[in-house]
Length: 403
Length: 224
Image (cartoon, rainbow over all chains, first blue to last red; front, side, top):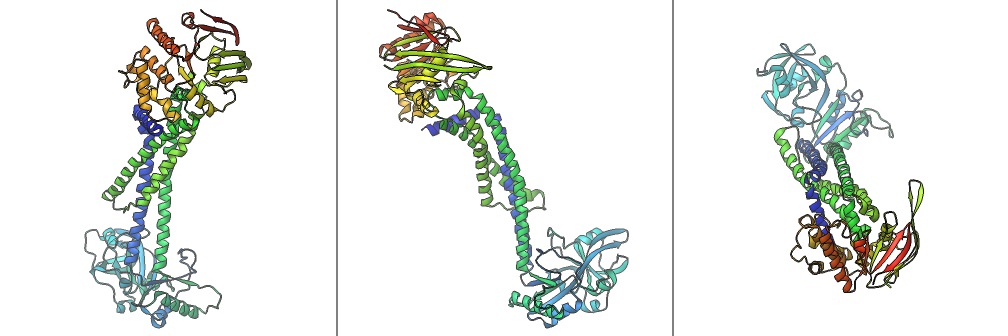
């Protein structure tokens, strides 16, 4: 009975100063909306990364020089992976369908007066099926061209846009670090993957890349396509054994290369996305915290304004607990209603964001909503407690005398 | 005996100097009495009213209310005593502005955790003659009507004493007389009433008057 009368009285007093109550609520509304939409962006990013990574297939192994264990961060200066290693993997390792040796670097491209800086990958034509690239126009370079150190290039669609605009690039000559190359084909767009854009790169034969463009005699990575039906981990072990033998590593010394499979990469990206989500969520939580301080401020003002009312209630027999509860209910109504409005706004924003920008994919999860709501309830109780305690502790004589 | 107070002392520290608001007050009140506590401002009558009303505790001395020693109770225990044993009627009415008459009168019962509060509140408003104003908020009522609501609220828990602090101070003389008449009717039905006032006119309504000066009882006059 007393509880419902108290709730009713709280609602009345909140409505009596509706503007002020709304402003106090606004902090929570914005905070909850921010948490939900930020988490939606985080979850969406995670999902789109996972979709793309899994689309690349789970039968890809990537061999890179350098030690593993540094959470996927490679040192590109390691010179332990040679072309001979790549050929040995193709020839001797069991369960390998095909390989693509790769060297990478950054180059300056020039066509007429247009300049563009982009990533170059020197590889073989097998790179395309392994990495799930398709040729949109023209053709890929061939094995004889690779063997002949041909100066032919396959361009990503973004690179084509940058250099050629609306012109047809096929058959045109471009300069790469001052060397003439003929454009033989254009890749089909894959879409930006966040950490690097596969549509803004140029593919050339690894032979040309190593000897003429980049001047390297070691490889950056070897992509290995595992044969259908083979156990990926067994193939990985086979390659490890082969490379250790070729590099003459003593038992006990660590590998001077590392091999990652798709499952590892999925795990890594998962962790990245998780970190991303936590970061966004915690930034948004700060606004929820600020909203809580706003509630505390308003509640302190309310308690002061209603000192006389508190005195009256105490005179007719209200105990400290009843007064405490009354003001806690008020602050919880503010944060609860604010939280619900915030959920509405946050979900609305998450749905609306993809209409305004293609940069973000959003995905609202029930856990995110529950998290934001319970956080806002905690904020209401936590920041409402001190003002409510002050009200409860007021001396009835002093409170009745208050004008 | 409904009130037995012995050697009540209360001191305040005001700006570094100690003020003895109550300096050894002895007071006995019989059940069914109507009593006026009088005195100029600074005489300690407000402090005495606060202690009799259990809003505050004496520094020393003993206060027995309806057979229970309440001089050393905790704050929450005092709240319970105020709720059950004491009905306050204030000079400025002290109704809650956002609640209607019925809800105001019902509130002490809710704090007491009692059921059928609405029915009993309506009954109490009927006894003070306000059965047609139950759903009006205080600012829709006249001063006299507000004080009647306050009296109904004071009576709702059937308290041992009705404590009036200048209950006619904010009313015109005609309405004041009506409220005093109401107190008389209640007193005739056996209710113990203590009025704190500085108006001799009001005090004359009471059979017994207690005069305070400098925190002491100067004399106790019994009229007729």
